[in-house]
Image (cartoon, rainbow, N blue to C red; front, side):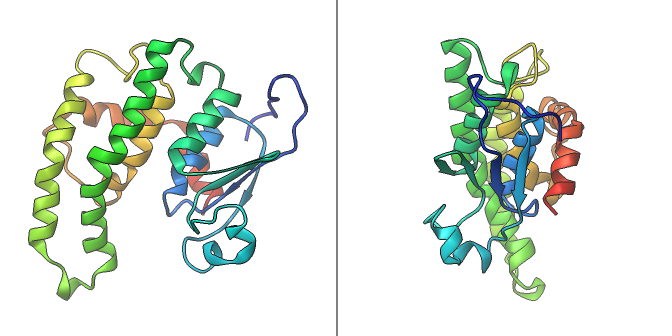
Length: 215
């Protein structure tokens, strides 16, 4: 973790981030490592720990990740990441309304266009016994992913990052959600711009630190 940053020039209590890397919390662990704010990691898993009263007081939904910063208790990984980038991330968060709107759009897009189909694959490959898996469900999900991946591939044509000139929270949010595709070894070769871009995103040292601290 890098040195402590302060919000609006005021010394704040240490940020707490709840979750483990083998879950959606990896997205927010990546974000907090990327922005470099000093924080306390609380290793809450998504089963028993997330249902305990002390955690439900922070996130009544009983899911991870969750973040506490002063009197702010926040849930949902995309909201957490946008907050961290805006409060502590400097150039990671867009500086004008145009790019800010695009950041919100892409952060929402990945949750609605990519997440449902990729979760169908994950459920079949990791939570259903091998002898009971339905290859038709996996095949349908893989096919469904082709359309949004084509959209993303087109957006990345001729540029390194979603907002153009630099890595931003838009890239982190979309690539963070798509880490699951990497986990299930989804073939991105038919979308070369996406493949190139994900490789660049996943090579960032902040992601390696997130994987290590969140284990």
